[in-house]
Amino acid sequence: MLEIAGIELLPAWPVFLTFVAAGLALNIVPGADMTFIVASAARGGRRDGVIASLGVGAGALVHILAAVLGLSAILASSQWLFDTIKWAGAAYLLWLAVGLLREGKPATEAAEAARPRGSGWRLFRQAMLVNILNPKVALFFLAFLPQFVDPAASVPALQILALGLWFDFAGTLVNIAIALAAAGAAGRLRHIAWLGRAARWLAATAMGALAVQMALSARRQA
Image (cartoon, rainbow, N blue to C red; front, side, top):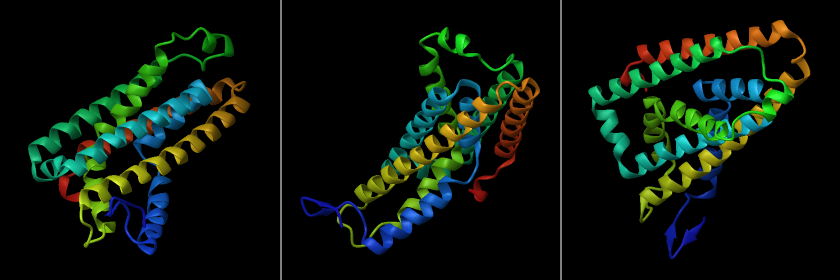
C-alpha cells in the first residue's frame, strides 16, 4: 500500500477496500449533517449546499484530528464532557430549527444576489458546528478508524489520520452530490409556495427530532 519513507499510510488493499465500502455505506445514512445540508441547499441553492457540505467536512476533520491525538478517548471516558458537548449540540440544533421556522418564503434569484458576502462564511461555520457539537461523531471516529489499522504498522496514528482523511473526503463528495440534487429539486418546485413552507417545516422538525435524540443519547450507545 501507500508508503512514505518506509511508513505505511494505509493498510493492505483488501482491508482498505473494505474500509472504503463501509465508509460509503455510513456516509449515505441520514443524520444531522445531511439534514442541515439538504435544508441549506433547498433554501439557498447549489452554492449554499456546497458551502454547507464543506463546513461539515471541516467539522469532521476536527474530530479526525482529535481521534489521532487521543482527545476522543478523553471524551469517551468523561461523562461530564460528553454531556456538556451533547447538550450544547442539542441546543444548537434547536436554535437552527427555530431559525428555519422564522424564515419567510424561499429566496428569489434577486434576493440571492443581494445576500451579504459574509453569509457564505456564516453558513460554513454553522455547518461546521453542527458536526463538531455532536459528541457521537467523535466517538464514531475513535471506534471506527482503528478497526482498519494494520496491527503491524510502524506509526498507527498516521494510518488513522490517512483513513480519516479518506473517509472525510469521500463523505464530502457524497454530501455535495446530495446538496446538488436537493438544490435542483428545490429549484424545479420553488414556484409552489406551499411546498417551500412545508419543506422548511419538515427540515425544522427533523432537526428538532435530532436535537431531542442527541439530548437523550447516552455515552454507552455511541
